[in-house]
Image 1 (cartoon, rainbow, N blue to C red):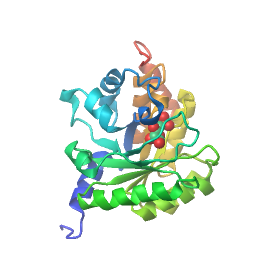
Image 2 (tube, rainbow, N blue to C red):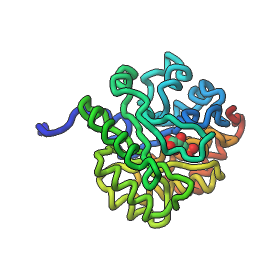
Image 3 (cartoon, protein in one colour):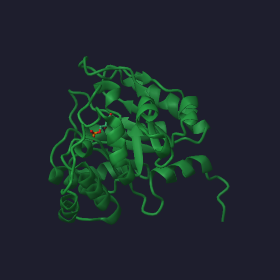
Image 4 (cartoon, rainbow, N blue to C red):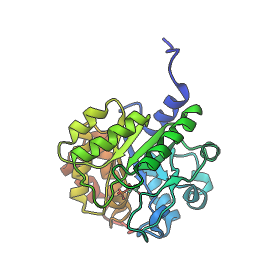
Length: 274
Ligand code: R5P
């Protein structure tokens, strides 16, 4: 039976981002240059995209990267989660002073499946960034575009359940359809407290294949819809092995050990990305 109240545009885009078959997603985050400039692994971003695009479900990136680094023939092959907040750089200690940088019209013109806005809860710019999120949700929902909220963590904030659940719940209440946050102790509670909103987990700084895969495994076992990893994929010596191993955890419920076998099977011929 057709649900007369179904928000078809939102649902259709959500289905492009998070597979309706298993409610999971491997999102590849390559939005770092918006504040970090030429990040290792993303200096030659066209090659990074060409190499990893086949193995991700969704690409989280920026307007400039879509224009400059996705080959014309690849456009539309994977949904884009378009970062639409920014306005700072690593040259300042405090990165929280963000504003909305891309209009909803531009996101529609670029065929974004969703748009992403960061909030910096507990920072000097907390209110500004929450209003960036709510303003974008107001515009995006009008056109059936889901908004992903990123719970950015300032240097002085602890990445613990108390903080991340606070930030995530604020994003849910604002109307975010997907929340991107960090893994922490007692993570299942965070997922439970924001249910049914989908949660994806950020990878953080490059660690090691076993550690990053364990984080991915623990995240989905705790109920997360998947991961939105960046550096742990594109800065690894075996980036294709890494994203395929993550895919096996997210979509095939592989254990970390099984995923490491997938990783190892891709080692011959592995090429580091610049
Ligand atoms: C966070 O605000 C941005 O989306 C980052 O670029 C993203 O979270 C980084 O991904 P990772 O920490 O896995 O490199």
